[in-house]
Image (tube, rainbow, N blue to C red; front, top):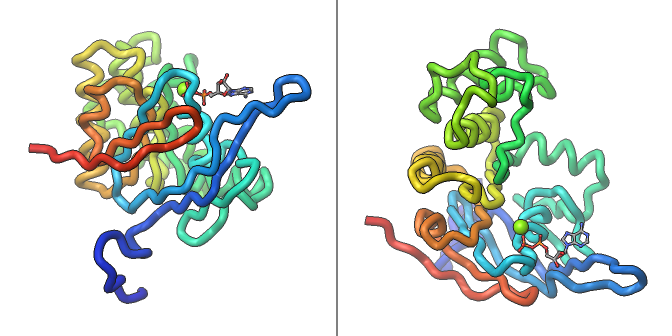
Length: 243
Ligand code: ADP
Ligand code: MG
């Protein structure tokens, strides 16, 4: 353990992810179309960050870099001192499996697997025994309020319930970081509020660091901090107070 920083504000120990000079573009024919240009910011431990911005502004691109799904063209992304931008595909995949839980707009559940089997899936990549995997998956399902839906197939669940199964799947490996790309984009208001309340609890009670992309202002209200992405550039942090 290192001593806490004496400086005011966020000390280094409070920072989970440091992005420095991150740029990313996509090739269109022979032209590199810039999407993110020289992005520099920190994500603190146990932060719940909402990334907002117009469609096409690069929110998903940025989220995918933070989650280690893609490499930046330039810059570094240090997570607990390790620059994930420098990792090769295999190491990056291992890093993701150990550290990141994913929540998508359309849930991405396996249609032929039950709710419990879907939640258990990320654990089949670990060395845990069958019994332990089952116990953890059951616990995660109970945490999202679906302990009584273990045997249901995704098609037998509402959209809101499917997203809660997806949240359980995202946390079953106990990752440090949760990333969510428009998690409420396909949900009605009530289901959206339920999913957001669960994410808020995971943040506040279990200390999960969450980065959520959304263009829904009401969804962003659940986060602790809001940042805006526009024309490849990120604007300052707006801290939120919850009642
Ligand atoms: P957002 O999530 O804010 O809507 P994206 O990050 O998905 O924005 O996309 C930003 C820009 O990058 C868009 O112009 C999009 O067309 C382009 N883009 C995203 N992914 C790719 C890709 N894999 N190949 C080429 N262009 C892409
Ligand atoms: Mg997107």
